[in-house]
Length: 254
Image 1 (cartoon, rainbow, N blue to C red):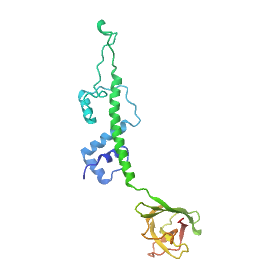
Image 2: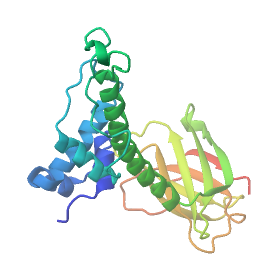
Image 3: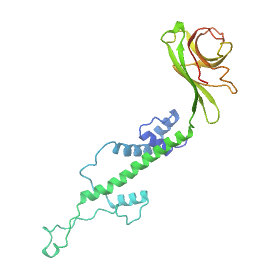
């Protein structure tokens, strides 16, 4: 298996469940991917509402060089120069040097140095994750609801309810989304149908597994000819016809 990409590792660091079984197994066995996930997780944890510590340790010169290289900054970068040494205060300096001496406090300099660096890492993490989420959103074209219906209970199913809507994708593909709230007796299942207005014809869309289902409409099917959404209770008897026991039903506003 190939290494896990940076976008997936970034989402993982942000707490998203984005790994399948194969990716989890790879992460457990691949030191490179595990190190990348750990580094991004540390960045996410560091900015999870934590305040900067009051006491910061001055890093060695090699750290500043690594930071410049990572952020592609010039050597003379002002914000990333090593902290300046403390010059003697006017009280401590020799008499001839007191007039022009200044004190450059180290703590504010260190805080100013580290915060931009850590913030850059956090921005990279958020940017990667945000880019992936935006790509996913863009990859899913918006659908349009072209019809809807309220599904009312039939006499034997008082208290049941439901609704249906027809969604059309930009490519013309249509789907019926059905939601039903009613108990399913043991040994039965639900089937979704489109009926003619006078109940003289019907088209099966499929089995409703759970409280909500999405069903593709056959190409060329005219909803004005079959505008009624019907959900029936069926038995495992091998008979593909409608049982005659409808749970909820309602006309689409086509």
